[in-house]
Image (cartoon, rainbow, N blue to C red; front, side, top):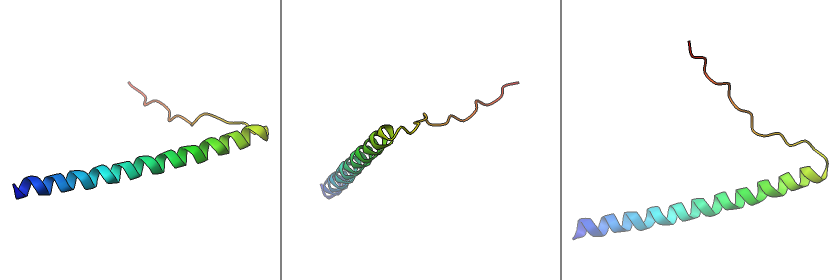
Length: 58
């Protein structure tokens, strides 16, 4: 039973860590959206992310 309790505590800590990570990512997304809106109003050009060239197959 001690092993199960230890595993459960680990799971709870991991869940809490992941929740914090998702909340931080949501804040970053909001900041990026705001920056995009600001740049759009200034007339700046917004380019899509650059894509790496596809590997050559011979």
